[in-house]
Figure (cartoon, one colour):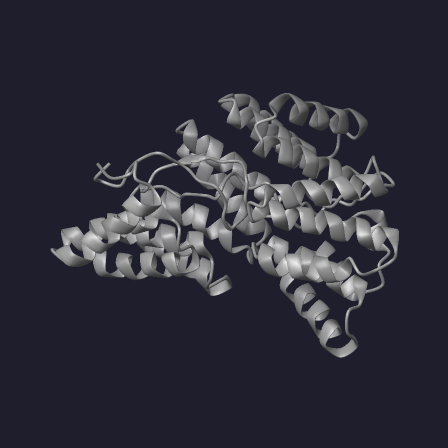
Length: 374
């Protein structure tokens, strides 16, 4: 559509390769509902309770993980992710491939939506001959692969992890996420229900159940599932983002904004939360505060594609077209195959009577997705 407002089913990005959420070019386009956001809840069983894949992604800590000697794990548990990542990286520089540091670094980069880097650390950790190290490394590898859209690699890592421990909760959650990506709804639901039956206080399982309901268009039930996840872990930031996205679909915008505010309150360092908040503020033309949110997001992660892309949409809506083009260009640098970014860039050039630049951008859109442009 020429106005760039088509409905898109966004794969991930970022952020992660998540289940999709419907968005348009004037609304936050998330890489999918956040699924790999970290839960800070400690495990109540003898199995690991990290988190599922996107997200995101990253990091709830199991009893076994809590016993790890590296101080970075304690920092992660207390949500000091930047300090934890620095501690892990310092150890790796000073002492070489310490498995504790490699695994911790992998989880930190997953949480920061940098799956390519997380994958490198996970692969290095796989050199360990300790089963617990290999189990977590395989889970991180599978999570990163899923975020990158490498479904076969994710399946292979998940299968190998479950061969080490067939009831490993995180690997079962990863398997459920893979089933969701493959649209194997029945098997995905069966895995999730089994986990919840065994551990009704598992926030990650409830988060996935919410995504299942969302994909089925059962928005009210999705909200209830997200509320269960927050009952289990009130600091589970990604659930606030997911809940807010569903509330927007229900046109409950004040409640959605409250959910996004809760997300950034619980984790002020998580850049994506400010993107969600900025997008909904931009939706109602509250541009000053929206721009402040996007600036905060980019202060925390200057390479976050969704921050630049949605900042561009907000600037476009505010008719600050030159600024919008700059952000679309940065978004394209980070994700060269994102057709919507080229389309919105083309619209800005067209409205500025920069016709040759508009034609170049439209040609790129046609090459990437011929169905977008009439």
